[in-house]
Image 1 (cartoon, rainbow over the protein chains, first blue to last red):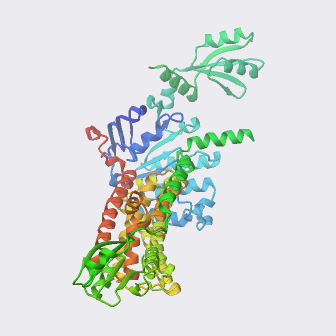
Image 2 (image 1 turned 90 degrees about the vertical axis):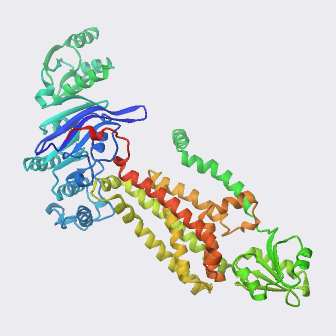
Image 3 (image 1 turned 45 degrees about the vertical axis):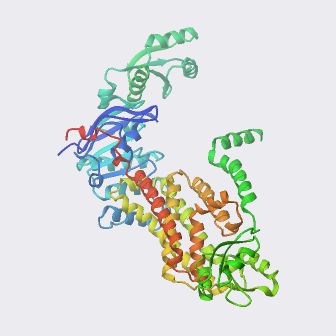
Length: 289
Length: 348
């Protein structure tokens, strides 16, 4: 089976701003590829190009082995950030419209949405709206599922359920391309593509991305004081429980800042988490001209 | 409170559409009202027919702008000249005393003409055609049909289309395997049908409640309404493609609606406006629809005299609707534009 998605050296500019800069990636059947990056990294623009919603200024895109067109889009299930549901139609009417637009038999309303089947979508909760959007994206049995920030604003339990469904689809051979900025969700992906300022700064599994990257852990009596001092020094400081961690800077810099502030602390290198590795890669990219 | 006021001014300064409504619109309204809001008719297009046509034409007061004479024309032909809107007044010298046929479908012109002719006493007999009592509602209802079509076609359509963009469903439609033509027709057809229904209801109510005559061909009227609908629907679609929110769409649609109300001859007679302003009126679709609807309903005019208005409306419909469809299609299928030159270079 051919690659579901193939993007090669794609660039997209908006005036002087380069939203996507020479990006390449692929998605295989049954694979969950996570597109990571902060807001404005270029994830959504890349997905919009792939779906034909905006054009590439340079580079090549293939969807199911072909230039994206109406027939390839028939095999794509897409859940946009805004969900793309009609708030002024009921749940059932949304289901009917999607079925008629894609040309398949109108299915039953998903079991968990039956109690609100005749309620306007705008009047049901966000969790149910996401469930409906996900059901509609899958109803035409797509070969590729594209999810743009699928769990934004969803509670942890609903998020876990949604990822269960994503995994079930992948096991059935559906390729999944998902954008997220939640690190916990990145760990659900088979492969990660990290974007920063429009470019791919790293790609691979979680282990490959963290690799030999280290962070600095600081143990001190007063973690609040340590945090405040490091933060005031402009270092990317984070909290893991009550442990203070600093990403993307050498240990001696942390030691010097603490020493100058007259703080005694145990400072040591530790393996970086995915989030810390991303901060390091992002910082490195920002330093690259 | 001071913070709120400062914040409000900062927001307003960056909202160009609202700023335009705040400053440009009042100036525009002042200019338009200053020049257009004029019920005084200084010139009435006139034809003189019958054996004494040449002699009478030269002695008419300057108010009557004689545009032609025909010594051989009969009284019936004189009436036809009024029906076909060749002139607002036709003076027939074949009768004794001469008869002035006045077009009652041009309300203010007819009022001015009959007042001037009345001053001539028994020297001339005045016959007001098509609206003998100069009833205002008879003139307003055919024009109102056009205004209602404009309202539904431009404002309601643009709001409906922008709603898709604002809620993000337009993006979802673009991703579905629908042809752009399916989406465009599917979006516009309901508004076309609703506006047609509105037109039918208003016309029937006008005839039933106000007793407005319907002397011409209903089929020709329907054709004119459909052509005009394509113009105003196209405007609605164009506005939607240039607006991000329903509020913006309403603002822009109102800016297109207001000049049409003021300058189409619907309220203020075009004959009373200075040429520069009346020319703006002639560039607006409602002006031409009002000519057609009043012509068909009140005068029973046919295509032989109304064809210029049909040609203008058809030209506007083709231009505006085509531009609208192209812009809407671009929103739905941007990838078909030739801006990704090497997309094909990727090996399969």
